[in-house]
Structures are given as C-alpha cells and as structure tokens.
Length: 342
Image (cartoon, rainbow, N blue to C red; front, side, top):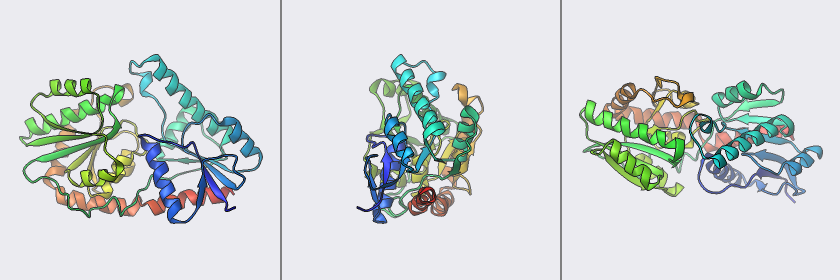
C-alpha cells in the first residue's frame, strides 16, 4: 500500500479549518499523493493535525511507533473571556484551547503556525516550544480564485463586501463595524454605498443592523457554496475583513487572488497579508483585545482611497496573491515539513 499522510480530524461545515483541509487535500490529489483520516492505517507515514481532536490516545500510540506528528496552529478562542457567552459555549471554547495546548506540548513532534502573529500569540500564552516550528501562510488555487470572469463591480455605486462563516455572538460586532463603516462612507463622503454580507446571520441580528442604519443599503446573500465566492469577490470594490485577531483568514487571501482589495484594522495577521498596496490596514484606535469600539473615521477614509483608486488597488491585490499565496506553494511547504520529520 502506498504511504499516506493522515489528516486529523476529518472536518465538515463552515470555517477556516474546513477550508484549509479541502484546499490541502486538493493539492495532494493534484500531486497524486495518498491521504487518510484513519490514524491506525498501517501505511501512514506522517500525521497532520489541523484542529482540536479527542483522539489523544491514538495519537500518543502513533507517536510511540515513531510516526511524525505535525500540528497546524491558528489562533485560540478568546472572545468568550471578554464577552458575555453561554456557559456551554465557554466550556467548549476552553476545552478546545486546552486540547490544542496539550497536543502542542506533549504530542506534536513539530509545529506549523499559520502566521507570525499566531506564533507570537501561542508563545506568549503557553511559552516557547523547543520543537521544530515554522510559519506557513494559507494558500489557494490561483486559477479558481482569479481575476478571470464575467463579474465586475457595479459602476453606479460602491459595493463593500463582508465574507464570514458565522456572524453571531461576539462575531456580530464585526458586522456592526461593517455597517458603521458603510454608513460613514455614505454620509461623510457622500457616496452611494451597498454593503453586501455573505455568511450566516440570524434574523434578529439583521433587524438590529437595520435599526442601527435604517437607510443603509444592505444585501444579505446568506451562506454561499465555496464555488460562488470568486464571482462574488470579483463583483465588489473592496472586502472589509471584520475578524479580530485572525491568524490567517482565508477570505482575505481569496479576495486578493480575485483582485479584490482588502480593508481591515491592524489586528491579528492582517498586516502580514495585506501589503504592497493590495489594500489598507489601519489602526484600530482602541483595545481590540477588550472588544472596545473601534475608530470608524480612519477606516472610512482608507475605504474611500481604495474606492477612488480601485483599478490600481485591484492590480496590486492580484499581484500580492500570486507572489505569496499560491496553493502549490503552500502544499509544497507543508509536505517539506512533513517529509523532514519522516
């Protein structure tokens, strides 16, 4: 039987880890490489952990057999510590943090951090690790996510796009910031603005957003299949990345690859991803770790700059993605780490 890489755990649904798993498997298939989700498979040559898992005993036994175990680390759950959160959600968040930290300390033989920000965060909270580690940013298929397509931004108004998996609980703050941003661009800068929201948003939250900005044009697209995201990206003028302290948000990389400039606050890994004129990253203006309200005027001014010079920003966004975020480059880097430990 052909040697295979075991990917743990098998994921489904929405979110960055699910997206990464799908993209990594796509890259392995293109290389005709074998993979499995079964830790006990005899042909397993290495294990890649991409999220919290309770299969600790099986992982420990695999480690005892000499199988290399590489842990991919993004960020941690943290909003529940500063935002009122249901007890079950708090327990689930803390359990997942504990699992990741336990695997990092006792089971993993090597670590891949999604970003410099992610590495600094883990080392600050749980201490530095003597295990081999590196930083590998996420990657995407630059043919699927590209500037090629019939879609283009509207000519009669500005379209600000927000793409998130779930916009509920503390994450609804990001949606509120997007609404305030669009309202500021509309009222302070006298522009016709549409805020397009892609993601899971409950009806009560939608109603609250319309109460905050009753005259704002908001288009609710709901949850879309991944195959439709490139077209949506190409149809907007700018993506607002609302996720605070994100380790390496896929929505940002996907947007850049489609030639969509990115606007964001300087939290998490955003400044690592969005530079070389591919968008604008501005100071938050408050303590984002405490979920304090951000400063909207600088964000709106940066947004207008992107809107008024959209063609140049779009070109640089695509260039940035091509130079740094290709799927082939990411998969090759991961395989290089896995093979180094074999």
